Length: 110
Length: 110
Length: 110
Length: 110
Image (cartoon, rainbow over all chains, first blue to last red; front, side, top):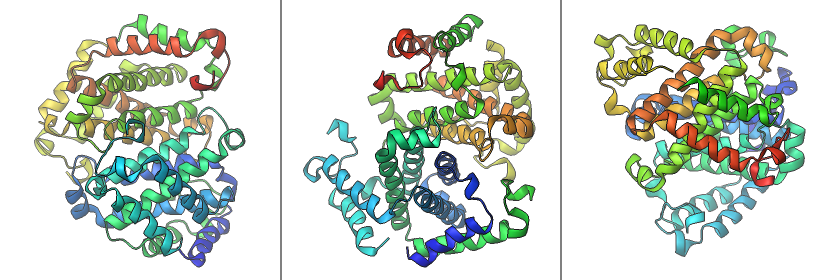
């Protein structure tokens, strides 16, 4: 995501003076809520049925999750690029290719 | 986020042949789970206490949310840049600055 | 559920002096967390696979959801019997049998 | 909760022939969704503000969580009374009164 778009997200918040409500705890709650609004589109149906009936809504809810992730990172002075790169390295150690290839087991069971 | 890092995330998945499990519905479930792992770090404590005791974990859980968002976008052939820009425009219409300045009301109540 | 068991749940909380943490907002967070701990047992697998590998855990997580529901009701002075009976009546109006028989459509689409 | 009300919940489902959709995995998803609908009533506000503006909705959402818990227990042939009593015993062992009195620490940190 380019910096210009991130700046627009921050400006959206600041134009409305919403930073006061954006404590990390409140943003964590909002991320759970947005993730469940996405999940709701798959309630009672399978993936194909959900995409057929709700593709536009899926895009919007996924976008909201990303927007709140950026707001959370901004609020806590985190560099998204950096935290994702670090976590990916940890995941590589947790899930060695030779043990996890084609397996849906949790890393604690590998 | 630069394309190189996104490619690493996709490669991480493909190296393990995990695409078979990554139906959009399963990824939506995972996003809810990851968002709640983040939220759990704020359970019973306020934001400052959570940051003091769990800053590293917060970074990791937020990173996982972003990683799954990218996996979801890839699986559904969505352009993150594009869906976020579009949703931000919608949010601008839903929450006009003059009505929502400094307010925590839902747009349905504005 | 008999009153004796409900009383044990309340006593468990009070023996530990945990009522101070049990604001309705905190309990709502905990309910989301517990529901996701249950959901996690179904991540990447179907219902039968989850039951085969995790039946004991499913029981425990479902029990935690019920325990927190009771703690929430107690904290807000709600009668579980009464709120469930009322909601069931609302659901009966929202989902008339002739329109919703065998259908997974949301009531807004009926 | 008396058996008569539980029977009404089961009858509500069966009158609509919804059992076909009620796999344990789908019910676990629904429990997460319902818990988040409850949590949403506390978004951006504290407990008192939520109760003032949304007490009726809180009752309804908590009732939905309990209804789905009962549907899940029925679908998996679980006795709610029994699983709650067992889990409460486990919690008593996990959180000894002398160590957890007045503390919000997780049991892993006690």
